[in-house]
Length: 481
Ligand SMILES: Cc1cc2nc3c(=O)[nH]c(=O)nc-3n(C[C@H](O)[C@H](O)[C@H](O)COP(=O)(O)OP(=O)(O)OC[C@H]3O[C@@H](n4cnc5c(N)ncnc54)[C@H](O)[C@@H]3O)c2cc1C
Ligand SMILES: NC(=O)c1ccc[n+]([C@@H]2O[C@H](COP(=O)([O-])OP(=O)(O)OC[C@H]3O[C@@H](n4cnc5c(N)ncnc54)[C@H](O)[C@@H]3O)[C@@H](O)[C@H]2O)c1
Image 1 (cartoon, rainbow, N blue to C red):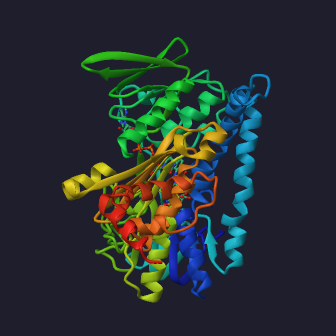
Image 2 (cartoon, rainbow, N blue to C red):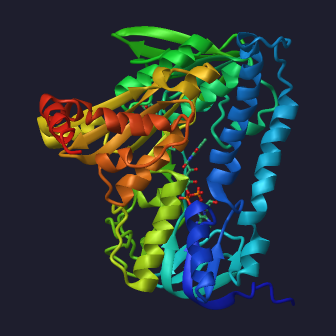
Image 3 (tube, rainbow, N blue to C red):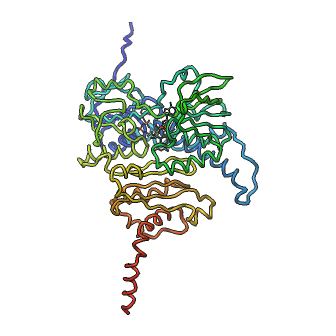
């Protein structure tokens, strides 16, 4: 008789990380580089959502779409080219190449090289300080849960009976869609709507509220207007209530102003938000409190019910961005290893939707600031159509808006080409306690789009600078030889 019992391998670790995505990998790398003994569990692809099914493939697809759009717009610059033709297999190969080029940085080999023990198995809690998988058992001083999120599939009647794609299957669809219907007008919905439209598909976005509802409404409207001009159908105030198969395609039945409006298409993308991935973690065994949003943690990211446990990234139930997951890993390292008091909300959080034009936001929108501080909030804006670089490049849509209170920056919104890159100056300023005036006190190279930031800041002082009293002062100073 053979003994068929699997030999479970026992480990002891300073840190166990569950999830090898943006948050988990940053935490594991940091801890290993500080000489700690780290065990990392990843049940699927190293790199998580961002590398494999999120940021990287979506931005790679958008870049292919941008190439097609540039060909369409070439005549405007006096260049003759023929109409773009999409080779879907080649576009997918471009997306794959982007993933494959970045993958080594997130790979098992790299992490093993850093000294991390990488276990490619599903992990779960066995008790408050032990994590187990099919073949291992690890006791740990600290446990990081960075298990991310997955596409939320809403309980819409009929949805289970029709074929649909999510961010996990969209980039490998065998056929290019003739008409892609997209449920959800958030960043995923709009980025993908523009990408597929530019690549030659018809697209319809179904959004029950306002599309890009978390952005500055005026700036969201500018971006949505641009998408509509390119041919994206954006249906706002349309709630998807039922889905059915129709003539070999799909039909989404929507409710709009009390009436039923059917939307037909060949393919369906579901992008109505994310569900935190806590499946099979056995959090009860670990005495880790959780709710619908994720692991219950405050802005220290540490579980109150089990002090060994920290949650980073999407599973922390806060903002869901790769840069936030990375920041969470930094907060964890500062608090756990250096005993600093850094909190998850101690720096302003930026967010960018990578449509053309991009919609970028840091900290409070004007509406959020007014709700908090009332009439003491001021704004100062500068339009892209007065920026020389934007004019030279023929891309003048957009503006930068600073949200200000008593000379302090409360937030900023930018819509326009390259908005996400331009926003960084404001993020840096806000993170380091700089004021609006500081944004006027540097030399911005000409001609750059980022000059809009200095111009928006300067506009805030124009009235005071050229006031009667200022003129009088300059007059008086002229008497001094
Ligand atoms: C289409 C799309 C586009 C996006 N674009 C952007 C963008 O442009 N910019 C941006 O900042 N953000 C973007 N995001 C969001 C970003 O991808 C996420 O916020 C980020 O990946 C979160 O990182 P994470 O570490 O929390 O989770 P993930 O990266 O998802 O990693 C979690 C990992 O945990 C593993 N795991 C789960 N449970 C277990 C378990 N029990 N045992 C072992 N392993 C487990 C999973 O397999 C996964 O690999 C996008 C998301 C999508 C879907
Ligand atoms: N550029 C980026 O940084 C980027 C890109 C993509 C995704 N992400 C991250 O992923 C998250 C998820 O993105 P998302 O776009 O899936 O979600 P989202 O929550 O931002 O948007 C989903 C939209 O779907 C709508 N909706 C929900 N149910 C509906 C129904 N039955 N009918 C019609 N509309 C409905 C909601 O009103 C909402 O506007 C984002 O919040 C962001 O954190 C970031």
